[in-house]
Amino acid sequence: LRRDVATVAEMLKREYPGAGENADGVDKDGRKSAKRGGGYATFMAGKWHVGSEYPPDASHEWIQNTMGDETHPTPIQRGFDKFYGTLGGGGSYYQPPSLVEDDKVVKEIMPEGFYYTDAINDKACEFIDTVSKSDQKPFFMYVAHCAPH
Image (tube, rainbow, N blue to C red; front, side):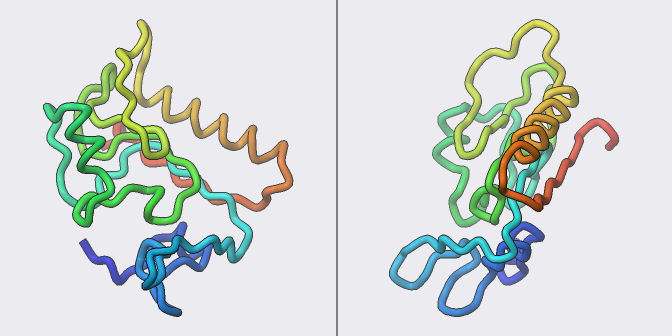
């Protein structure tokens, strides 16, 4: 994992390494940067799959305790305001194994009729709806479906 390269979300917010901050926007004293340079609201939905692997059979507890460490960065750590998706690369479309909303593992059993691709689209539409009704414009949204693979 290259920690010296800024993500698009970080570039939009200007929260990339420099001026005494690391790649997570944390200064040498451990304070999180509150910068919102550029004024973008940022959202990601879908497959993250950055950093080390999240095994499809990993427990929710393992995922919650592992995500965010040095080798398992999360979209929130890398500059996105909101995230809904899977951290790992593969799994079920009906019960995604590493499904996360923001920085919380979704532990619930998915309801009848749940399909991951539809859920990604629904969350993306919710974000657009929320942002379009607020003063927080412009926005950047990155949607990464698993199905087209």
